[in-house]
Image (tube, helix red, strand yellow):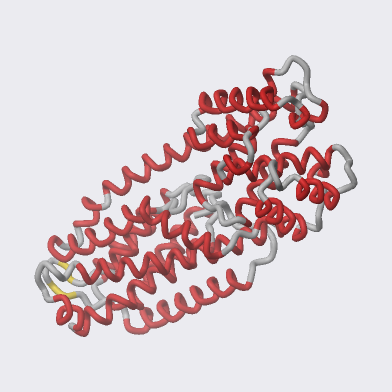
Length: 427
């Protein structure tokens, strides 16, 4: 998933998700308290598994699912049919009640340790697990699933089908919450919902696949071996979580390194204060406007931070940091040197390629390079006091024949219009 949601008032979509999850949780808890808990031993095992998974999560920046163990345990309970060869009778509402109770217990424990609980993530998990349980449990209890798939080697196709539908449901909710979070961050940062949904679906190939596979395998393992199966089958997922967290930490360190290097040009007097930060923020908003999400948006942000690093090779700074006044060969040399520096930071060849293309005609550039070039020119023009943002946009439009792609310039105009056409140099 994304960074913590904005600090503004919750959007209607967020309120709808929270309200639906709260209503479902209250119904499930009320029904379970009235009718009692079926198979209390199994309920305790999966409840502890979900609670333990929530307690060990850390929610590091960049992690889409910071509690994969809890997610896999909740899915396994929703897709549980038999236990040691005997049919279970817990039903969909008890699944929801156990997951909600486990999340509440973990939230209390985390609060006691001074760690914040994330309400939207809990609401999303409640709805996702509820969807899986409602799809699986009634068909299993009525025997319809067995009539469709049989009780032989084809039966696992049933939980796998439910898992695929559940993953799609979770992607829809995640994209909805991510768009609401972007709206809270500011008017210029609103990405198209379709792009966010595609990004979430693509992300299922990563940790989502491991979570889903562990959930299904754990449910099938309990069906054969009984309640002790989760202790063995969830171990690999825990190791995967540790490895993914270390990878995220490395990526975070790399981003911090690039941010520090980007300031080097400002400290040395080659670019105006805050230039790299402004270009990165505005380029990211323009990228979202053009449908970039996920890794492509990260590449754009990092390239925007580092696009001027090659200027450190100049003997004397260019006025205002605007290298467009230099000869084409010199611009090309600076861009190639900047790309070489980026390659040594570990940012990846994609980021270096964007930096290296800053002196090329836009028709030969990648989309990210076109965005960085246009936003950089806009910030330079605003710093030169050419007459304000509208005048700067007008000059960019005059350069669409060779220097700037028209679609990028228009996307920049839309982002600035939503933000009240605030001059880039104002920050």
